[in-house]
Amino acid sequence: MSETKQPGWLGRLFGRKAETRTETPSEAPAEAPVESAAPDPAETMPTEPTGTLSEGVPDFATAAADVLPAPPTATEASPETEPAHDLPDELAGADLEPVEGVEPDGVVPAAAEPEIPEPESQEPEPAAPEPEPVDEIPAADAPLVIYQPPVQAPASEEKRGWWSRLTGGLKRTSSALSDRVTGLFTKRKLDADTLEELEDALIQADFGLDTAARIAEAVGKGRYDKGIAPDEVRAILAAEVERALEPVARPLVVDTTKTPFVILMIGVNGAGKTTTIGKLTQKFRAQGHSVMLAAGDTFRAAAIEQLRVWGERTGAPVVARPQGSDAAGLAFDALQAAREAGTDILMIDTAGRLQNKTGLMAELEKVIRVIRKLDDEAPHAVLLVLDATVGQNALSQVEIFQKAAGVTGLVMTKLDGTARGGILVALAAKFGLPVHFIGVGEGVDDLEPFAARDFARAIAGLDKG
Picture 1 (cartoon, one colour):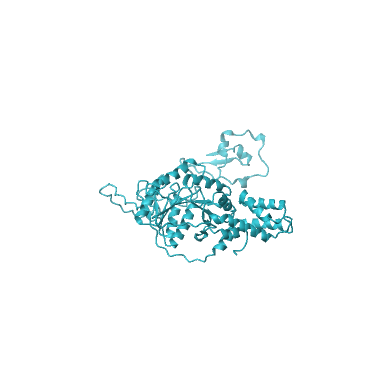
Picture 2 (tube, rainbow, N blue to C red; picture 1 turned 45 degrees about the horizontal axis):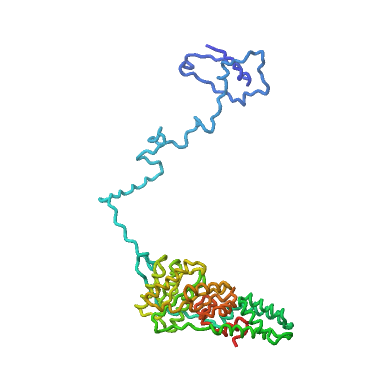
């Protein structure tokens, strides 16, 4: 039996011709028809189309069957290509979830973790006690603490002489005055204008109006319309300064019949009270006195720690309470402790306070009243520590602290770098309070008893002589 099959529209488009097909029962069974292989489109592609419109209309019923199958895409598995990796039989058809007891090829099973038996009792073990803090400030309700310093060997260091440190500290003041004097009196006769300019230079150096006027008058006395050498002017300046300071240059005398000899240290913030206490402690111990320190600046924890450091450096015990404790109560307890220990000198630090704060000044008065409940003569010395860099403000500090605490002597610090040392002359002229010590640096040896002659010649830029 033969059958002629006409090509469809697409077949005629690519030049396919009608095929005659004969089927016999022996050639192909009905249930398994043999499909002819599709020709390669590139081999049958004509150079020119062979079909015409007279050959008939397109056969849309058979067009879909005439479309060549597309080659496999990259995302599909080719039926002729075997898979590169077949899944094991155990995992065939699975959803790739882990199967218990089955490991992938090439993977070594991990060793089973040992089972840890649960404790019989679930009660928590008691926590180990925390170690107590070492050298910490006690709580507010803790008893008074006296810090005993460790024994330390004195450090050996090369020391400069006091004159060298003094002239170095007063270099700024002396250089400024020396330059002005040299400019004023070089190749120039002495007249009223020259003396007025000299007076202005002394005022700028904080000598004060009265002292500056007195020095200018001494320079001009008997020398009008005459020439004068700058060295002669500096000599007159040194002599006048020494004359003004000589009455107040008095050492601090410790009365050994009063045990303990109580020294109250006062001053504004940043004047250097705590550092001065450490330096004085070093000197007193070098003289053979036993010293105890009281950390009365209870407003700042750093002040308490700083005083403890000075106690370790100088070998003096420090009495302290927690930050925020009552300063008057601490002073009272410190005086009792010093009495029981037989200490020669008790130095009480106080909080820095501005002279215009009446509340803080009242607290300072309270400290003094409480101390006098044990010793009606205490404190035996009230030292006001002054910062030389504040200039004329030091005058108001002395006036207010004198009324509140009864200042008995002055300690002038920071007479170096930016200081104008003439303020000490102005203080001496106005108040006449003893000047016990002056400091020209941060070192222990940079605080020395005040000597009027050395100070006067150093500030005038002259040699020690």
